[in-house]
Amino acid sequence: MAIRNIRTMGDDILTKHCKEVKEMTPKTRNLIEDMLDTMYLAGGVGLAAPQVGILKRIAVVDVGDGPIVMVNPEIVETAGEQSGMEGCLSLPGKHALVTRPNYVKIRAFDRNMEPFEAEGEELLARAILHEYDHLEGIMYVDIMEGELEDVPEEEE
Ligand code: NI
Figure 1 (tube, rainbow, N blue to C red):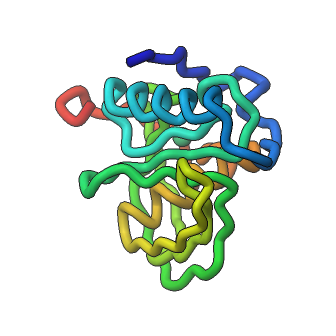
Figure 2 (cartoon, rainbow, N blue to C red):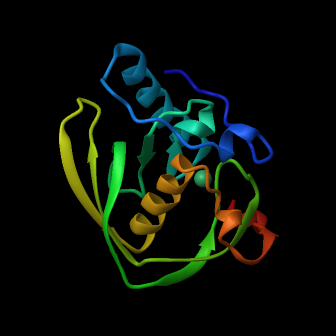
Figure 3 (cartoon, rainbow, N blue to C red):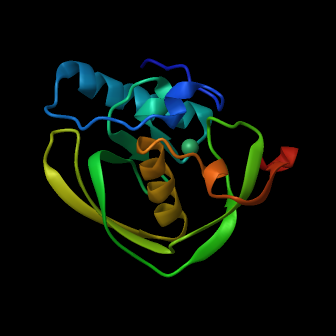
């Protein structure tokens, strides 16, 4: 298990567009495992490769139903709307109101570069779309409504 350093807002790498993964290599497989370990240790529900300093189109999500590894994800469909407080491991202790689709369907490749489709609603949709944005260099602060707020300590 290897924990990677999570880049925080202000780090330029978080504003960059990530590059497609062409093939699965032992190094990339290792990165995915480290991203999962890092996300779980930090208590997050998602993590994208640029957050650990790697400009590749890889993100992991786990809202409590098991990990989803997304390599080169594409948004196939979105529907509905949800508004809620959203946070990010790159902005510890903060959250803000963000409106997103309530449903998302994606197409991606798994850690063996096998294609798959997944869909999610509510928190899972929010997490998938948040991580997808990271691959485009977008942080939730770019699309939030209102101001950043401190997360009450008991919720951290
Ligand atoms: Ni984030």
